[in-house]
Picture 1: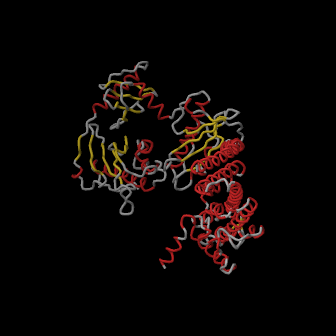
Picture 2: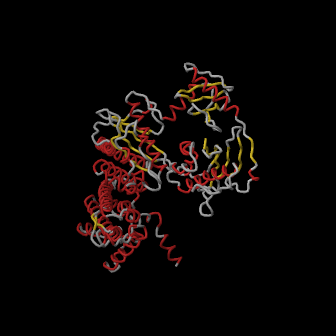
Picture 3: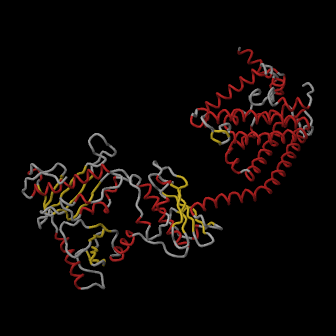
Length: 229
Length: 393
């Protein structure tokens, strides 16, 4: 991996390597919590907090963690921070805690967090890992915010619970349901792809070398895919 | 060595995370507990706005009505009760606040599976009720089962408040009546109201023991027990009351029904299935009524008729009426099988039978029943030699 400057690390997660629109990670919470802007922001910030903390923690311990048990170690760290976020949200933001429900606990298995731990935090310094967590977290929040804005405005006729003129009387109910989520998600991916001119998804970091299972797969899946074609 | 390093690393990370979680739990647990307590109190305040310092009651220490699932006392002596009531469906969860003086301060339905939503607003009707007035509050027509179940739950809440305050639960009129019957003749294994074939002067009702050990005759608000042969067992009654009870049982035992061949009467209404005549010349008719079950081809809920037994004088005055079987809709038409409905026809004639109250929320059932009763008067006209087939409708 070539050296990246700090600003580049911070900014890449926002658009060029946006975890939702470019890496296509964290699809489950993206679709589930974007029916309203408030829940999307809540989920985005909770995930961002876990991402930053786990990135820092994993980067701190990267030289102590043996390669053979790194995935269990990452999972323990991520699950621990998710539980921390759950506890504090339950105590100080109970309404948000109720709103996010089971999806809060499911942050543990959010591919973005494990992916960044494996691809970046486990290989970089604490400072860069923190910047990566912040950048990817902001990218995740912005992605959820953009999708939820479209879904809530069109599907529910409101923004953050505030009714909007015209939209509140012309609701497109399917937008708050699963098909509407998939539709908006797909359109947003296409838009981001157009803006980045298709370059984002060609980066090496997202090829076999950047895959979390690269050490065991050795490009086998890519070979199989070619043979299938 | 390699494996030991793996084990130690993972163990160390787990230990560090566990310490972090323990610290977080230490900070957040009291806040979470306070939040939950506050949320529970908010729900209690909905039904008792002036309540303070709610304390959960240990239900195991009291014998409360079975529908009570939670109870809370508050500082001024009021009680909030959470109940699991049954309306048209089970699991209608209701919260009821009862003030220290036994008045309902508020009632609300937290969750239910009812169909029309009347349970969401019926709480307003019962607010201000007491144990003495709760049964006088009307149910909602069209939602008899839902609102009846709701009212019953509020009665349970009022009783629970009395019990929690150290008193005894109030009994319904039916429970008091059943207790009086049982107290009069303890050997009896339940009672059945005697179907009167003739008017017996001086008595308010007659009940036979299900196990045949005797009768209880109601005279001057007293419950007078006799043995199976009519010998009075009860004590502390006047000679006149004793004579009335003895005579009543003798009359009941003397009743003999002689079948009447209804096929001999060409104008006999089809609804009449059988007819009998007593020695005093009264008639007993068995009829079928087309309720919700049988009403042309439009309804087919049960496919069953309502069967009715009526005793009537030759002059056309109903002595007694009873629904012997029915399969109308539970919560609606099925009320035609209740004594509170069919006993309304006692003493009615062709001119007055229309005055009775119909079954709430069961227009088809009521209409079919009333039509069958009108056939009683037609049948009597036919049996007594008249040729008038005109119904009272």
